[in-house]
Image 1: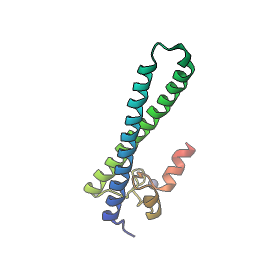
Image 2 (image 1 turned 120 degrees about the horizontal axis):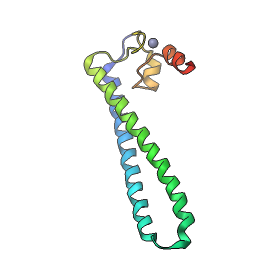
Image 3 (image 1 turned 90 degrees about the vertical axis):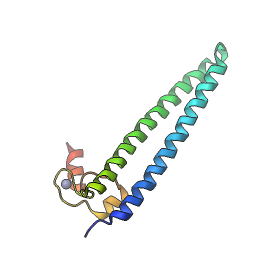
Image 4 (image 1 turned 120 degrees about the vertical axis):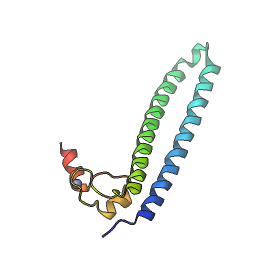
Length: 120
Ligand SMILES: [Zn+2]
């Protein structure tokens, strides 16, 4: 069974668009909460609020890091399509199953190697 490169590319581009717009939304959120923070500066009664906003920002930051990581994976997968190596496990060089690529279009390892890796 061969991987359909065109639909793989479509899936990756769609995923890329989704992650990019999510990142954009996060960045908008981030700049809004920074603005809020500035407005409340010097007001002691908002200390508790500021603390929870800091936590929110940390969560948003890690989501953003995650999104950046995803984008890198997606771009790498698009590069593999161009290079003709898409859909091959980078560990054992066996083809990655189509179901797995449909669920995770930027997968770099077959399910067996992934399981081995997770087991350590
Ligand atoms: Zn493998």
